[in-house]
Image 1 (cartoon, rainbow, N blue to C red):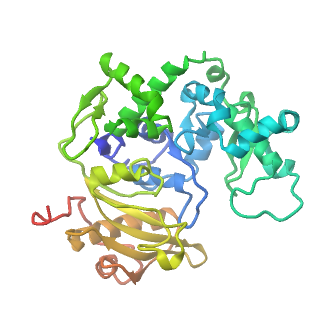
Image 2: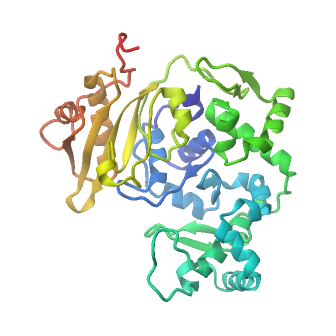
Image 3: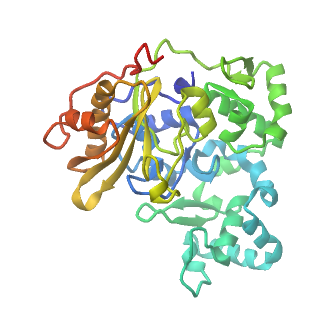
Length: 406
């Protein structure tokens, strides 16, 4: 049910992938988290690859430029269908308690400065934060924001300005909403906060198939305490159904549109920020799969690698691979490849070889280089063949655990 809700029972397109397919993905997931890490590819591109396969890499920026998507704090910074913008206005109105402490403090301590920055955006937009920067010393660690950036982020959180990403360097371009978003959306009435929160909870239920209270609230970063009564009201109104899931300690909830497919035949590499796996406790409850991103872990302490993608085969997470795009050498590096306990390596290696070949072709990389780390590496290297992984053995995405392992 969880995988069906996330679109993994929809077949990948066989021909040209276009805006219609992008809309279908957003109808399944609701938002796509944005992240700057580019060791393989920008993370926001990977959920599309997982569900659509190879596709034009300008699908997201073009949809944003055409006003179909807007960026806001959905889960984290996220691409969201612009039709949902009214549902986030309560969060914009609550910026003083929702935004980061330093951003909110700027609005209290220097309101005149914030208004001056707003005036500059109104006069000169779209603008980069660097064009308004007061910085004279070199930038320090991540999130070392100067006053102009803090003011821009406050205005962004309140919805008084909005932003799009530049394609070449990922930087935000800030401008007024009326110059970036459709007037028809901005003219929509603002729903009462309780109604907007309920609408987001129902969307989260549809996207997740089956979910606990915390699952429902974390999808759009709502407070479980504030939403507990709202969920009860949705149940009483028949808009959510309570459910019991074997092995789960908490009550679950199911959307009336949720489906229980007879089988799932997925085959996909999942970004660390894919909505299937971004809540790690939910991943363990659903799949029995322990996953932690190790980007911020010192190299000697990493267990699996720097940028590790779980591998979904059938309806199970059967393994993981540490990937890097070595663009100067036109190579997709597999720095480590691992299977879960009790998983047969052969079927996983065959299926993963096919998926990596598709990925390399999509990224314009000529070779796939499998390094030695991980018990799956030898079988994967054999499945890719002696050339460059262009013609791996075809494989059906079937559940890979043996009967004894279950």
